[in-house]
Image 1 (tube, one colour):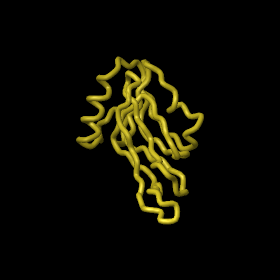
Image 2 (cartoon, rainbow, N blue to C red):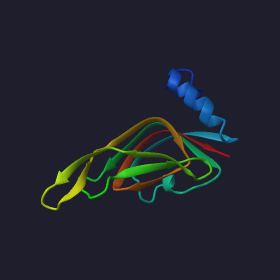
Image 3 (tube, rainbow, N blue to C red):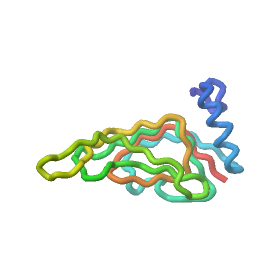
Image 4 (spheres, rainbow, N blue to C red):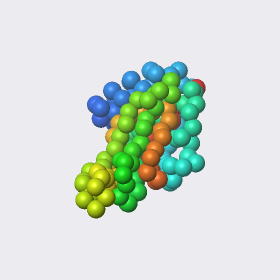
Length: 133
């Protein structure tokens, strides 16, 4: 995807664009690249008038072993749960007699969402577009 008008998009990106752009009646489309902390970012705040199209979304989860998995959740334009993403390696901790998870980074390609929430993921890279009403 090298152009603002989607001329050089892959077939998957064209399908994503056709579907996601029909979800809201947008007035502006803004190319957006973000690299930074998830906490305090605009991606956590729900707004009925915005929709993100992520050509690539990477989330860095903590490098510590946790009892539960680290994950991010994507919400749709109605602020309802849409997609849950986790990439954890589960193992049995014989000392604690409990199942634990070792998190790995997440890499999502060609997804759309209105906001995200996260547990244990603290840093992200977003490359895509923001549609605004």
